[in-house]
Length: 329
Ligand SMILES: Nc1nc2c(c(=O)[nH]1)N[C@H]1C(S)=C(S)[C@@H](COP(=O)(O)O)O[C@H]1N2
Ligand SMILES: [Mo]
Image 1 (cartoon, rainbow, N blue to C red):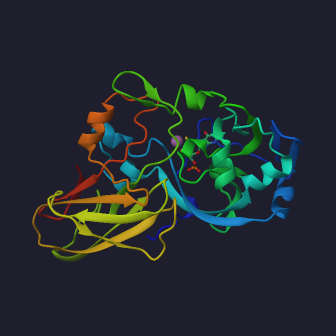
Image 2 (cartoon, rainbow, N blue to C red; image 1 turned 180 degrees about the vertical axis):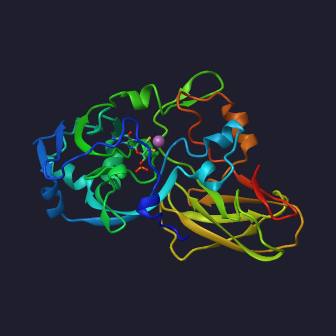
Image 3 (cartoon, rainbow, N blue to C red; image 1 turned 60 degrees about the vertical axis):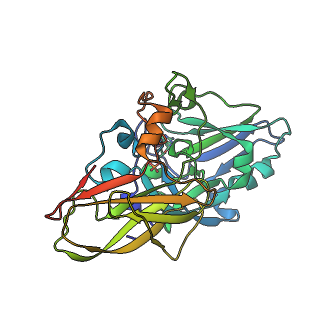
């Protein structure tokens, strides 16, 4: 319900387990192409000016099963690798300014303190724009699974660059070509080449009620409700179809329409007890609209990368049978 994912239900993705970190010993090192390398303790960070922002985190592989033609039976299984929280922390730009950015620096490498030393390269422009070094989530400390005591929050960009258990930031002239941006998290094209550094998450939506696994108890009024989001800014419009895409209606957007955050949409629907196909199609303020699966497959093919299909944002449909049972299609 609403747009905030309870912290206990925030999805988790970790490549080498959840480390146990003593916050009193945890440090963040900022070094490389800076004038003064700095080390921050958690206490140092908490003394600095803080900001709280509502943003989604979405794994690049979220809804990839739809691309593969093997959709998950429920909204959780098809679109569950996305969550939205209120994050609290300091602006990365403040830490970088304190260290003094060398004009030769154009990228940074962020590294986690987990066993695999998860690391991703991020262009300096983004780092100076809206990236947070977060220690809070929904009014409490980050959960261990979300990176306690410290994570990078990179608004609108694929989950993988939101480095958890953050302990090191190194400024550099170019990207590091780490394992997670070279061997993985690239998007395969039909000609065998791959997109690299496809950071932004495109506009997407999913109807959460009614959705797969639910059953409409009777004909009559049912509010259709769902979530829409975009890594490129605000959601500007969501259309809903109850007839398999022949006709579309504008859904109402919730009171809070924030950039790079979940937006709730709703539409009252009178179910006549007949078979129905319900779909949602979101558009963001950059003008992008969700494509059909057919369009994505014709542009990108059906060749998955080493970690499945990434950056799929096709229109999602649910089927309602005469007895009210909702299933994936
Ligand atoms: N240190 C570290 N950071 C990480 C990962 C990891 O394995 N180690 N996984 C990444 C991936 S693939 C995703 S999708 C997001 C998920 O964030 P969450 O678990 O808080 O939802 O964290 C990213 N940050
Ligand atoms: Mo991910």
